[in-house]
Image 1 (cartoon, one colour):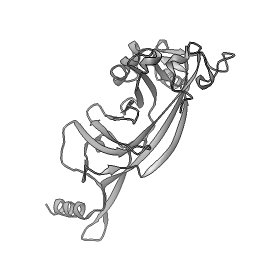
Image 2 (tube, rainbow, N blue to C red; image 1 turned 30 degrees about the vertical axis):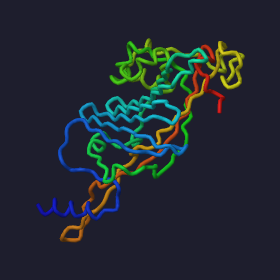
Image 3 (cartoon, helix red, strand yellow; image 1 turned 180 degrees about the vertical axis):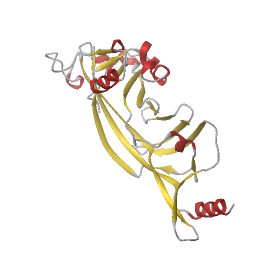
Image 4 (tube, one colour; image 1 turned 90 degrees about the vertical axis):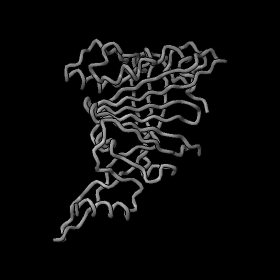
Length: 272
């Protein structure tokens, strides 16, 4: 009883904006955060934690209307990025274009799903900006993924990427890792690359919309909990007992380069 009272007092006087609830919660939880984008607009970011499936989902809408969804699958060490980009109907595109990028999830990229499920805001109306703005990770995603067998990598892929159809990509280095773990090689198809295809140019320099080219797409996770913070309570002997008392927020960019059979699938490349 004394320890609980001490903890409540410590939380009240804490200067942290975020606290970790120690109460027992259900398997799923949702957190809505107001985040400032680089163009000054405010977006509502939704973070969902599923401790049973050991995964985290982050979703927000960019200023241009693009819906960005990110999933961290801790069970399979896989992360999934999906972008739903509004199409340009006057240029012959469909209502929206979907892209999916799948890569390995490294440890300590984001806080565990259990910790995310316990995360609460003191001020849900506050507008957040990340404490640490990390650089842009460059990725050449030169392998196409067959969705019918994607369950071997992660159960989340099919639900996330079915709208992307044939625009589901990963890196060759990640494929080698997954093959060593016993994943079927028939799931992957190596795409043409600049070194192997003479005359393959960046889509930004191609004029003919039906010409194959190397497309680039960039996105940024503007706000996510990247690290846990720890505080210390002093007991009667003066010894410090650490406990989770908050999070550090980060922002990180990703830049993907991949082959497209014609520039019509990459009209944004090179445009300001």
